[in-house]
Length: 249
Image (tube, rainbow, N blue to C red; front, side, top):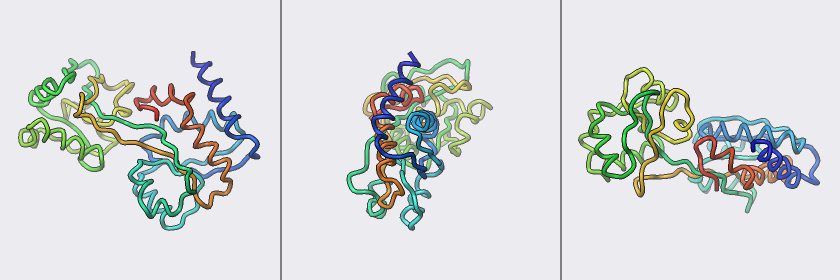
């Protein structure tokens, strides 16, 4: 099955890239989507002949660099950043394509009993029963989790349970036993060998961060840059995106 996906991606890259000559593209991408983009980028390079130099980092800082005049070919970031007027000003008009969205969920240390998060009531009880929860309070994901506490009517009760951590420490915190639950973006939790994924935030408690790719207005090779963006958004890329805990489109 994997070979079928690879063949489909190869075909997509060839169709998207021709007749543009081989080019070298500078890509700035949000670190949160790195696993999926890295895998897809390798397929694109192999099939198209184009060379990609991808720098992964904090989206807000990357947006500031582009807005300040730094040269780039493709920008992959959360929609909120791409839609900022200062970012739009440095993008090729009409070049933005939707790539994927990431929801949030709950995980526990590998081997620990999986809590019930299948409904709002179940998640509420799970959170109230937990001695501590780890999550990143800053950024869109943190704001959404705090809002979820408020929606469930447990904001005050959760204050004493919260372990505010950095992105890179979410999983480590529950692995070390410093927190019982991890509440974070699904792509950090799904398939992670150190944790057991309990499930996504249920129903209307779920929130998503959507990501897009856009071509720079002064891209060195606009056609090749558009080909890469089209490749990432092609239906053939969906299985890889899903495998990394994200939803295509």
